[in-house]
Image 1 (cartoon, rainbow over the protein chains, first blue to last red):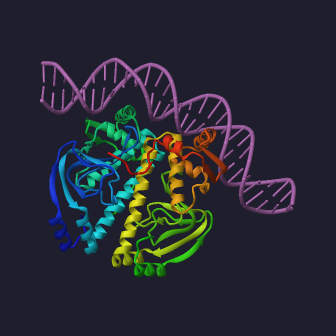
Image 2 (image 1 turned 180 degrees about the horizontal axis):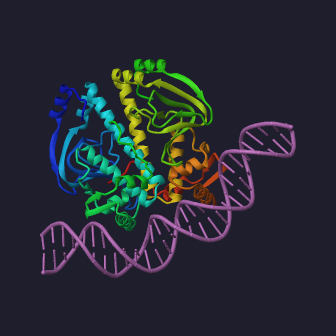
Image 3 (image 1 turned 180 degrees about the vertical axis):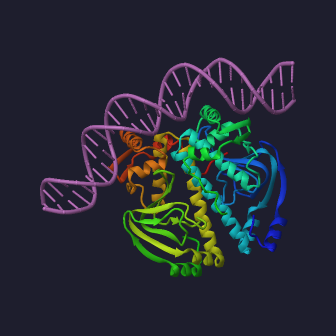
Length: 223
Length: 223
DNA sequence: CGCCAAGTTGACAAGTCTCAATGTAAGTGG
DNA sequence: CCACTTACATTGAGACTTGTCAACTTGGCG
């Protein structure tokens, strides 16, 4: 989090506890009370919500720097689990509340984080509401790529997709076979190259963006 | 907004300016700087985002009590316009910032409002990501109905749908003819009665909820 | 090396979209 | 106040994307 003054930052850092999470380890459970707020430090996580029956809908992926449960209210809005081995920094929810009331700068930093997350959710509403399979995949690959670069990776580095295809499919509102075929089509069109199922090279961002309908052309946002 | 102490409330009320909006009047324009935060007092509004071309995706409907642009960041995330004649209460964004820094109770009230809005967006992600046309309509009618009752209307009062069918279709990620047919099916199944295109009576909420997959039954769930 | 989970590919059915015509309510001017 | 005009909603027929079910292939991990 940028923009914190020295005092707020040190107070927050001293309140954080770090711990490792294993690849499929559960972090949050939907409906349970929010005891801690987590920040992904290393690795990656996914958030999902359950529907009656055994249906689940993936609502987001989290990478280093992303905050989990910052504005869930009293109970968890979604379940979450690690999709790669990693590290979390955790903060008791009530402790965060105190710090927020105390430090304006922390409040503003958190506000920016919330705004960004909300913008992501709205972007995703557009993906799910008005796009074909190929458009959804292209738009989402670009979105994840942009976030990866925002974390300091160079454009040449292949995009890291730690989630299973099933989960990516759910996130895109598609069935697994459809997603698989769509990957195949993008590969055939030479827009991407799959080094492995979790590493994809974006060969032509321009054309991907065009395919995605330029929906997020410069959603890169100042935050 | 509930939970405000007397002082914060009076300070906020004195900073509000009220003004009327006509039926299709534009309130916000996507990408423009956020100068004011608006609260719907009377009437209704919708929020949408543009994609390249002339495609637009409706991302939400707002009714009395709902807040517009409270956490948009520096620029508007979405455009908004009135879908019924009404009244807005407006507050300069920087003035809101001052009040927030000053009053803990206002901060908490706004935090609740943001949490609620985010929960709505995530509910809608489930609608768009994993539901058939009938499920989408049933779930959304129930959602709007619940919000209407939360505004103090009795269950016998027909559900008010001030938006055009086109906009509701966009919100549901469907095309207009599909939505129309789906309305027809729910009508044929005696789940709803359309008094007019903007007034719908929910005849069997139980069965509608079942059709919707109980997605939002009580938001409280057992593990 | 072999097993099991994960991903790919194929054939077919189903739901939704598209295009187009018809019907209906709302707004406007004579 | 009525006829006209426009905007909005419903309905119909056919094409196409996606979902479904199933077989098959790949790859990670013991």
